Length: 410
Image (cartoon, rainbow, N blue to C red; front, side, top):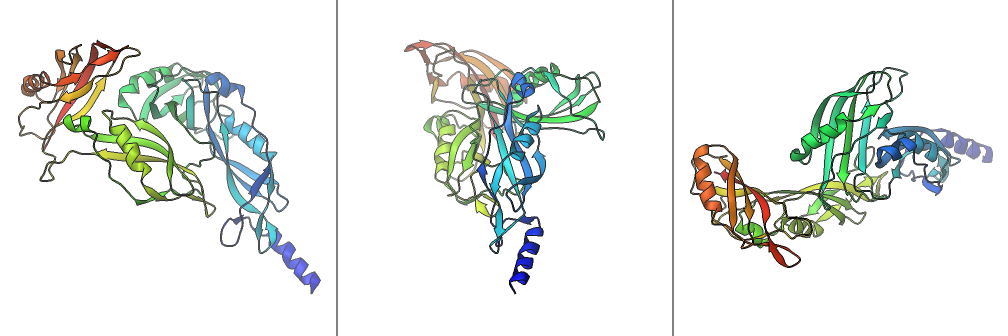
């Protein structure tokens, strides 16, 4: 009988690999080393997180390691080498150690230079047996504001000389940075080799990515909102009839609470703070990995829409407003506004640039573009009557450039 039980135990240990859950416990790391930072990545000024799929055998050894989220620059190879040397407490089924497939994330972080590129993925379609393009020279876009992050995805063809061509911005959280990003990428050079189409995704600016927080996918489920609080309007934004969407980066912790907020796409006029204030009160079903709640990175959109007493959005609204204060100066604040009369054409718009002078008055107004030239005069006339608390530097009023986009909604 004892021999029979031993044989069953051996047979169970040889099955698999299993997935955690349904009676199978998750392997855990008991001994780990930090990865070496590849010179290629260090010279290129990039960091990021590599995800690795692996099987932890019944002796706690990592086997069958595969990179499931590559970010290039030698970081994938460094991550594989590091995890291969880790030691695990194996997963268990029915009291017996069994092989369990799981995933690990290896984080690479540079000491916070402002122009670091936070790599999200870097993949090339290579002929069989060909090695990936190695980066020799990289150029970074100019960093955004201190509290901003821009995320982009770029497709390109790297030719035999290592020169990128046919660059296309597939996705960006800030369309105004398109030319800057593409101009920087054209300066990149790779080690000459096989031509290959590549796709590169990265963020630049400061992004607080918690090392312990997973990304959605590869066995990690997305958090789900269970209780949602609508955002309140900031009074300054209400005066400006300002509408738009704030995009937030958050980490939803295992208790279903959002933390580590970062504004990826700001609106300003107090709405960014109101978006964070609202999402702080949301409740989530946390994301899971191997059936267990874990901290998960997420992106949340918070919409702000102005409605009248009848629930209608009809009329002119501010679609975008931006200030360019001198270094060390605070921006002007909107005190009062005026809008043109109604338009029969939904989607009418006009973009106007001007300066807010030391008295809080708009001066040097200029219509940059509009849907119909006939509206330019009316929009300019309305904006002349806007009033601001002027920008201040060291307590002294200063002139601050401003751009406003007004949009007609029917």
